[in-house]
Amino acid sequence: MSGIIGLECTKCGAQVAPSVPQNVCPNDGGILFARYDLEQVKESFTLPALSGRPASLWRYREVLPQITPVTLGEGYTPLLHSREWENLWIKEEGLNPTGSFKARGISLAVSAAKAFGSKKLAMPSAGNAASALAAYAAAADLEAYVFMPRDVPRANLRECELYGAKITLVDGLINDCARLVSEGKKREGWFDVSTLKEPYRVEGKKTMAYELFEQLGGTLPDAIIFPSGGGVGVIAMWKAFDEMQKLGWIRSRRPRMIAVQAEGCAPLVQAWKQGRATVVPWTGASTIAAGLRVPQPYGDYLVLDILRRSQGQAIAVSEEEIKRSMHDWACREGILASPEGASSLAAYRKLLAQGSAPGTGSLAETDQVVAFNTGTGLKYLDILELPKPPARRQIGGLITPY
Image 1: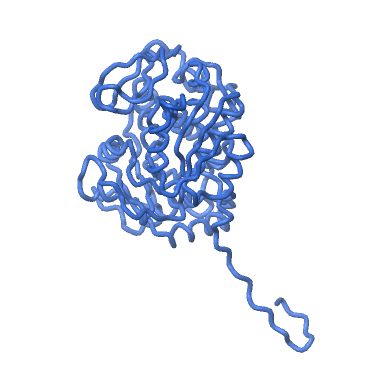
Image 2 (image 1 turned 45 degrees about the vertical axis):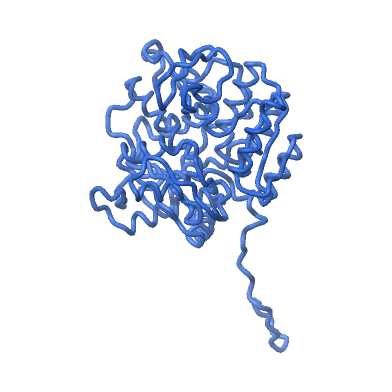
């Protein structure tokens, strides 16, 4: 893979060749990270050099694989200043192709797979990643095989059908879908593009951190709040901060990373509170936020380490807090957020209410914070509860507002 000097295991440090398709480390199943010769590009890859480049994630080409992009215009999403909170910014990922931040990683994964000559791509998904894979595979003239829980939001199912993906609905959760992909990939000749089980989805998602730095004028916020099912957004941005530090872009303290989960499926929060380095699989997972319904994230060891190193934390929010935050962001900000994205506002409120005691990971109103809306709420219209209008009243022929 041109532009990459090697793939490195995040567990054992083993070096794996980037010249052929790879999934995880052959030694211990560790997640593989792409590494670049940052010293070589350090002098030319600067903030001023970005001026005039295309408004997509591919503007950061020096820290991406040198391949022909399969692109639908992903990345460089708006960073919006909150109308309600003075020191809160909202990164609006719902404006990506297929309506979520998943487009970033899938664009890179499909581009790499096509460059390697793969023909059939398979993945488990809670919904939005499947939509993205179906779209990008169609653009690349590749076959997409997606496995989703049977209760996936209907919009995701319809998207996958329209894009021509081969769909399997599973009576279970995303881990059950993942098992079917693993069992069938050798027999069917699929290349597995599951979350963190190939090196390039992280590369697409890390561009969120580069965008923040650029959009904030060469600075970073005090904290980043990110809805986390598999936790790839947290992992990817932290990888970008590593690169940016080596490039000389950042010299100050990195943002505190705050991972948000739903109370009905919070394995990272549970492990965080218990001081564990890995999660215990969550049982009975249930939440309106389909993308947060991940009982055992594959990258748990990386997410939990990043939260500790950044002095951040993992926090869970309730279903009612998520629904209320969806309503409030729509009414007050004009943003129709996904349930996953709205969880970041719920977390922000919760952390402000806790105060800013040292070591708690909580926030003060003076802290500059970026909360991510990871997708559009338009995909969840079939499961949203809308307020009921008041009952009609008959009042003797008077014209009334009822």
